[in-house]
Amino acid sequence: MRLVRDEVRVRVPATSANLGPGFDAFGLAHTIHDHVRVRATTGETEVRVIGEGAGEVSGGDDHLVVRALRAGLDHVGAPQAGFSLDCENAIPHGRGLGSSAAAVVAGLVAARGLISEPEALNDRVLLELATDFEGHPDNAAPALLGGATVAWMQGRNAHAARIEVDSRIALTVLVPTERLPTKRARAALPATVSHADAAFNAGRAGLLTLALTSRPDLLMAATEDRLHQTQRADAMMASIALVGRLREAGHPAVVSGAGPTVLVFDDLSHRALELAGLGSAVQEWSVRRPSIDLVGAQIL
Image (cartoon, rainbow, N blue to C red; front, top):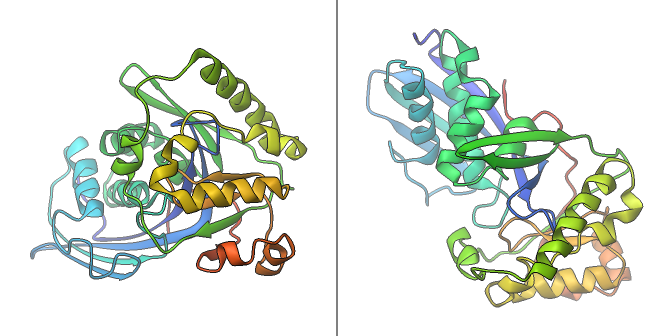
């Protein structure tokens, strides 16, 4: 396998995992993007970051995008080089919007763009490699494929399928200033759940597929969860309280991924939140209204 390009530009979307009942399975891509330019060089690897993560993340070979890029090249036996990366990040870090999955997918897609036989790093292979980094495919799948996805593990192999989302569904993302490490959020989960709660979520996850594809009127019921959101309340009390208040006001709201961002299946402006009596509750939150990214990661 040869490197046939010395530069590639990649765009990758933010994602929300779980979507309520679909724990570690459902995901959705947003039109909030990180942009990465990768250039092969003869010198040492150097990473420059503007936007989210600037001044915080590594500027060398242990940067997550670089690690994923090298893993992709290693997988197909392509030669390694020094790399110069320019990252323009819009995806918030530590907020439950898939920033680490986006970095991994960006690096893997960049590897695909550099090699002589890009089909050797097809979507199936990239999902497998991304899952090796992430531990589960729920964020990697929509980041790679776009749209809404259901991902699952078959033995040690990761798989994903697209869900075609009804065009009437709108989104609002409420992003707080504080962060929550995914490891801390996962540590709050119990080792076992009751049969009743498992059955409840299985039914709601099936209903969520119907609601997303053709029955958005069912989203309130379809986004109910008993497996992970309230169990993490101590780690993100403001988020869980806001989800409750939004739902009481008739808006299908869930925690985005491991939180603390809140995802609402509705088009809410600051004014709409004020009319619902929620203006003060979200005063310190960034209100964004992305659409669903239907493309996923792409080489520009």
